[in-house]
Amino acid sequence: MAKQRLLKELTRIAISSVALLGAVGAAHAGAFGLRTQSTTALGGAFAGNASGMPGISSMFWNPATVTMNPGYTSEYNFTYVVPDVSVTPVSPTPGAALQFGGSGNIGQEAFIPASYNAYQVNDMVWVGLSTGSAFGSITKPEPVWAGQVYGRSSRVISLGATPILGLKLNDYVSVGFGPTIQYLKVRLNSAIGLGPSAPTAILEGDAWGVGFTAGVTVTPFAGTTLGLGFRSSTQHDLEGTFRTGPLVRAAKVTLNTPEQLTFGITQQITQDFKLSAGVEWMNWSRLNIPGVTNAATGIPMVGVPLRYKDGWIYSIGGEYQVTSQWAVRAGVAYEQSPIDNSNRSVRLPDTDRIYASIGASYDWNERIRISATYSHVFGIGDNAIRIAPGNPQYQGLPFYADTKASVDIVSASVRIKWDDPKVAQAAPIVARY
Image 1 (spheres, helix red, strand yellow):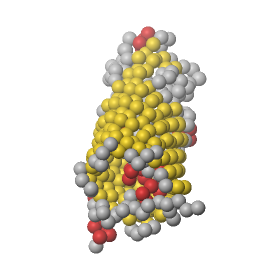
Image 2: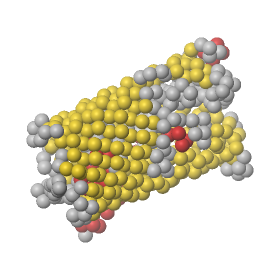
Image 3: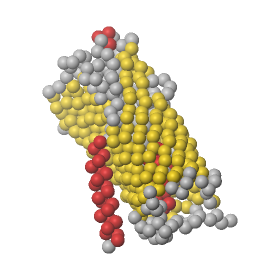
C-alpha cells in the first residue's frame, strides 16, 4: 500500500509540474539552456551541484545524490526570471534597415517550476523522480525593427521527467542512473523583407526524445564529498511546418541537445560552514547547423545556422548555518558562453556572464524547509552582432548591432519530509583506513 501511495504521489507531481511548464520563457544560461532547476543551487551559484550541496535537487546534475536523502522527501521549486536584453543596430547596417530602429527589450519574463522526489527503499536502494526544464527561450523584439529579417520572434520550450535509481554501494561510494524523457517545441519567426508590411516566415515543430543520466558520489572521509554527473544528448526528430507567406510545407529537422558533464566538491570547513566548488561542460558544438528538409520530398529547404561552441561554467559558493533554523548561502559563477562574435544572432544575443547569488533557508519545523534566492546575471565581454558575407546567418542584408543583456532571478522552494525525521536519519559516514 505504501508503494502504491508513493507511485500515485509521484505521478501527480509529474503531471502537475509538466502542466506548469507551459510558462517556460527566456533562457538565462548559455545559448538556450536554463539554470532554474533549483532554488538552493541558484543561491550557491551552482557550486557543488554534483556533490549534493543543493540537497535533493542535486539529482538533476548527478542522480547518485539521491542516496543522500534518507526516508521520503519532496521538493518544489518556483523560479521567476526577468531578463533585460536589447539589440541596437549600428553602421554599416544599410540606412534602409536602420530607419526602423532597435529591438527594444526582447527578453520575456518567465515562471519556471521544477520538482524532486526521493524515496529510500532500504539501506542500499533509493528511487527518485525529477521534473523540470533543461532548455527554453522566448525572445520577442518590436513588431517592426531593423533586424526583422533575422528574427521577429523565437520560442523554444522543453518539458522533462527523469526517473532515477540510486545505489549506496558502501560508506564511500554511491551511483545513480535513469532515463530522461523530454519534449521539445520550437517556433522561429522572421520577416521576408523590411518594413511593417513584410510577410513572416515561420518554422515550427515538436518532438519527444529519450536520453539518460548517470553519476557517482565519493566520500573519501567525513566532511568531504566529490560528485560527477552526466546528462546525455537527446535526439529530437522535430516534425512541423515551414511557412513562407501563403506557402505551407511539411518540414522536419533533427536537433540533438548537448551533453552535460558536471563535477562538484563540497567540504565541511566547520560544524556550521561548508564550502563548495564546481565545473560544468556542455557540448553545444554538436548542434552545428541543423538542416530543415521537406517532409514529403526529403529535399533540403533551409538551415538553422547555430554553430555554437562548447560552454563552460566555473563556480564557488558557501553555506553557513546561522541558527538551528536559519541557513544562509552565497556564490559567484563565471560562464563561458557558446556564443561569440562569430555566431551571435538577434534571436540569442548571448555573451559571457557572471552570476552573483544570495539565498537563505528556514526550517519551519522538522519536516518543512522553505528557501529563497536572488541572483543577478551580468553580461560581460564583447557583445557585437556582425552578420555579413561569410557569416552562416547572412541572407543578403548586412546587419551590425551592439547588444546589452542582464537578468534578475528570484526563486523559492519548499522541501517536505513525509516520514518521521527522527526515524529516517542517514547513517554517519566514517572513514576507514
